[in-house]
Length: 123
Image (tube, rainbow, N blue to C red):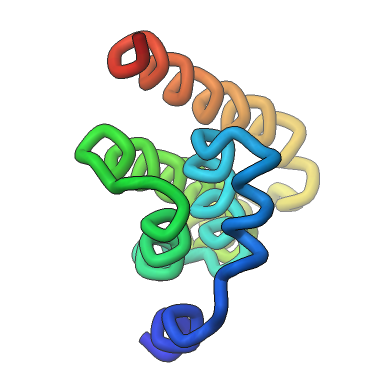
């Protein structure tokens, strides 16, 4: 909540100026993905991303769904995600070595969800 209130109070003009040069759809996928990966919590990522994305484009149900999917997929791949940490410890696998398999799966999932959004909602 503290991070969300802090971001809501900030001037997000830098994101708005970036959005003039970058496709907003890319930001809808990348902003929550980065927050989820860094924090290891998908709900925190959504709470932080929504105010940023809402200032750039209108939040429609398809955009909100894509934002949620991006946050969730990146949360699963986060090194701070406790399930990943416990699973790696239980199976005796080094987390950094597991990214050899986890990174391509995560990137592919993000690309497929974005492609599905484009096919279904953009004309």
